[in-house]
Image 1 (spheres, one colour):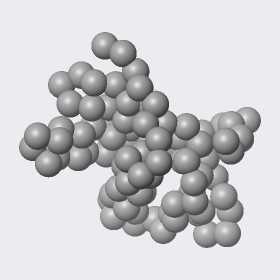
Image 2 (image 1 turned 60 degrees about the vertical axis):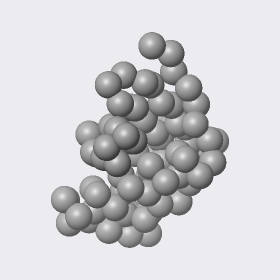
Image 3 (image 1 turned 180 degrees about the vertical axis):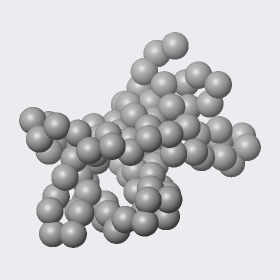
Length: 91
């Protein structure tokens, strides 16, 4: 099971989905800024692991996102969205 590095619209769309879903569930107001890193792994669906810069109020923070996608079912599920260490920098 190899890993791939999605780029552009694919990874951005998944990152925005994750932030939107997290905001609805956690009652937060994060705003997507940019991608830091993206990987996907095909298992029983596709696991996306994405580093994303998001605005939390007036502070930009880096978050680690995991989303499961099953495209044949048109299904997406946010697995996790957590702040990452300040040592991770923008790409």
